[in-house]
Length: 132
Image: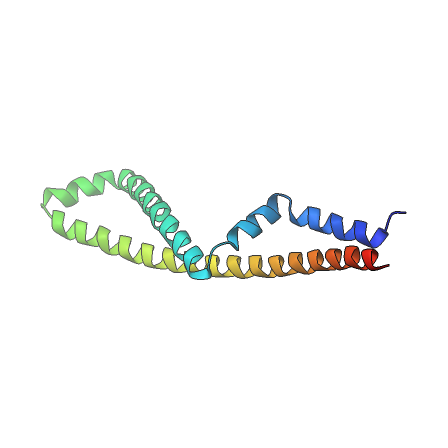
């Protein structure tokens, strides 16, 4: 006869092992600090690409003003401004990346704990069936 409780537990485990659950289990294979560092490194590269794209769009927008600005040969002042804004942008962006990574890791830890709890219940139900 089919045990309804066992079927429910198996279906919960199967849902947790689907696409979302695979990501949760994979994320938890890292230590927290390693996961955060990987996310910060990815964030650094993606943030640099985003800042470069933003700068290209902004330079296209102010092209006429830029010609007047460079007519006075103020290259170094412009470069200092751009690097200052890049530093500020990256600092804020990397802090946000680190916070998001820590929150995501903690959520994955809770989901993994729930997954292990369901798995333990399922093992106990099979063990209790053997004892009977």
